[in-house]
Structures are given as structure tokens and as C-alpha cells.
Image (cartoon, rainbow, N blue to C red; front, side, top):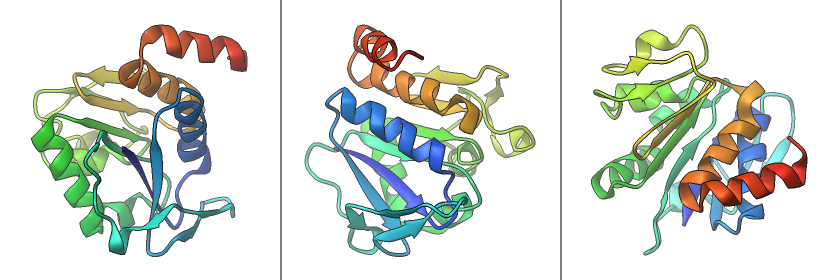
Length: 178
């Protein structure tokens, strides 16, 4: 199971586009609300999550974590559930994916040491230990980072390529006419 954590003020495109693309690819994804099951994005879109972070427990098929950016990224960085999920992904070599400002969370946890990563312009100094890239989406092993909302579809397709296959990502890209 892949877990997409959302907190008040999340950037809607950075969460919903990858979620949609992953589900099209048949990837099991659960949304987890930090601060309650219903969270509202930066532009007023309320989302009812599958579960509340206060009761979050990974299942036996834990596949990794996705963290969107937006003003809500700071609440993700303080969430015990998010930090536990990041730690578990690190320990098990599972997917750690973050977009926009959220790669700063991975940087603060030391996850980016010696890795290539990208983030929203202005957050580069927070990618502690990383080789900062200017690419729109960057994959380095089990870590996938992206610049922001403008590359949300490319980020989602990179997740599909990693979790399923490059061919599946290409099939979905053709289907959505990206």
C-alpha cells in the first residue's frame, strides 16, 4: 500500500494528479489526512481522506510515501505519522516521493544525503546533503522528487514508471494525451 499524506493547505494538483494516475495504473494508494479525515487544499478543495493520520498504521504491503507541497507541507513535517512513514520507507528501501516544498521534509530527515533531488525554487538550501538538480522530476533510487504543480502529471507518471513499469507509464500518458 502506498500512502499519500495530506494536510490543510496541500497543493491540490500535486496530490490529486499523481493519485489519479497511480489508481489508473492499479496501484493501491490510501490518502491519509493530517489533522483529520477531511482536509482542505490551498485553493479551497476539500478532500475526504481514506484515513486519519492520528490512527494511521501501515499495512503489511507497505510500498512507500507521497508528500505534496503547498502551504500544508509544514504540517506534514511535524506529523508523527508522516515521520514514522518516512522512517519505515527508509528502513525498508521503499518509495519516498515528494513534490514542491515537501522534498525539504526529506532533506531535514537526512534522506537526501548523497542523492540527486529537486524542489520548488527557493527551497534548495533545505535539501540537506543533496545534489540539487534543475530537472522537473528527479529519480534517484527509491526517491522521486519534483519541482511543483506544473509538473504534477510528470511526477505522477514517474511514480507509475517506478511502481509498475515505464511501459505502463507510457500507456497512461498516451491515454490522457499528455
